[in-house]
Amino acid sequence: MADIVEKTDRYEELLSEALAEATVAPPEGTPLETAAAEYLEMARSYREDGRHFREQDDLVNALAAFSYGHAWLDAGARLGLFEVPTEGHLFTV
Image (cartoon, rainbow, N blue to C red; front, side, top):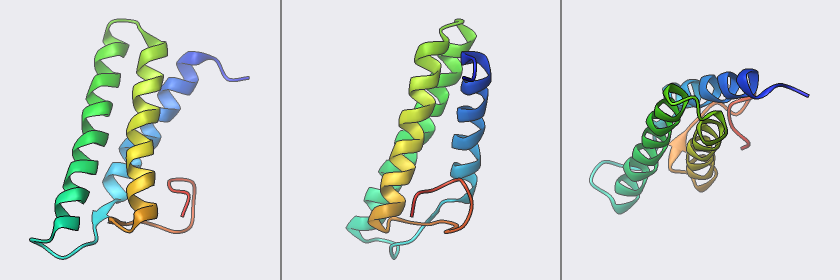
C-alpha cells in the first residue's frame, strides 16, 4: 500500500495534469460553458486547498482536496463539459 506522502504527491500530479488537459467543450456564452467554468474553478480551488493543507503538514486533508478536485474534472468530462483525452489514466470517460 502506498504511503500517504507518495499518494498525496501522485494525486496532486494527477489533478494538475488533468487540469492542463481539460478544455471547455460547450460553445462560448452558453449556460453549459458557464457550468464548465465553474467546474474548472472548483478543481483549481481544491488544488490550492490541497497545497495549503500540505504546507500545514495535513496530508489527509491535502489528499482529500486533490481527490475532490479531480472528481469535479472527471464529472465534468463525463457530462461533456470538457474535451479530454479518452486514452490514458487522467479521466474515466
